[in-house]
Image 1 (cartoon, rainbow, N blue to C red):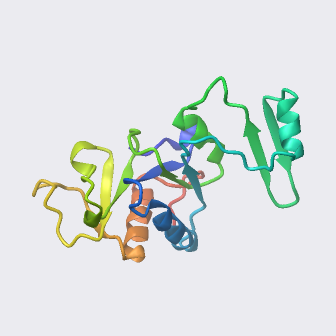
Image 2 (cartoon, rainbow, N blue to C red):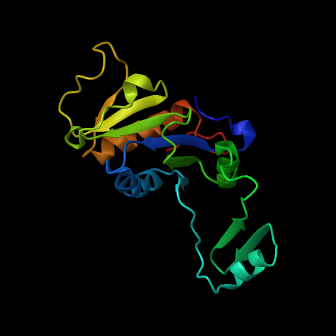
Length: 189
């Protein structure tokens, strides 16, 4: 299920769940643990609303308003590419992932119905149903539940303790090792 290194697209792993399940909290907690283990990790977050990263009077907006289809702004320690996506309001996921070609792994949040491998975040106290029984792309479930009765007893889907970041990071490292995570074909440390 991992994406091919030959495409120059890093391994992608979704963090899926309903609103309020703790996806962003999990990603921000996992990032240091994965980086400490030797991975270069990017994140991709879907916003269902338009956004702008610059104030309205910023020169980037002036350039876009003048008709530039893309504006690349570079600073001493970072850069950003703003693309006018009016003609392509929902760019394909592979196109977005190709922008992260310098990373080993991209943790993706907000594309829960895409056919990509995902770790589901599920908290039974929220009252929402589990995604895993209907989604063959769920590779693990991170949960606060002691038991999950919504999965068939013979389900091979690993269940991880949502409060054990070491176990979740370990699962992701093993996932990366199994899918040759790393743009150079190297195995992570």
